[in-house]
Length: 110
Length: 116
Image 1: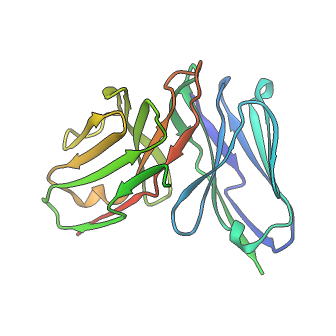
Image 2: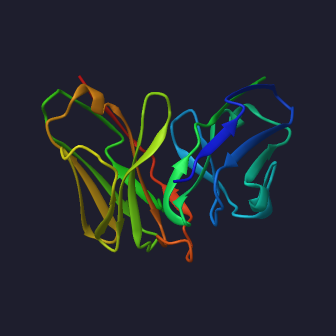
């Protein structure tokens, strides 16, 4: 099955800074999702992005499927961005369930 | 309207007890899942159901028994709870199971199970 690796594992930012989170996956995918787990434990869908670029407010994501990676950009970070960011891809041949990376723990300091 | 809802949100119980977690989705999805998140935040699939039928069982101990009375519900029953079962359990759903369809998954708010 697919392997999903995320970097960096931890990130501390000053409020207002920008950051890039990376997700590498070991096989071709037709689904790639980014989630934010907030400090209350909720898993919030950020992007469903098997390829290309999407933007949602201060967040954007790019997946380069041919090179097997995806990037999540956070601009002008806020303290509410703190939490753990996960990427996930289907286990094999595009069939679910999702395999998750270990996450990037982001702390935004005021 | 909550898309995927689980109850209860918190569950504290003694070793050896039997407990259930309920999950309902109002998205009209065909596929539902149970995931387990351990103390290191690692998320791993436990079960997948498609149209009420079990399609994936990830070598989970048979003390864990999922039940899907209909497409919108997937409950998780756990017998003889052990300390190691303490974790956060997430229910999720997606429209389709296979890559040819829409496999975007949506998660419930999680159930934090603590076994003492």
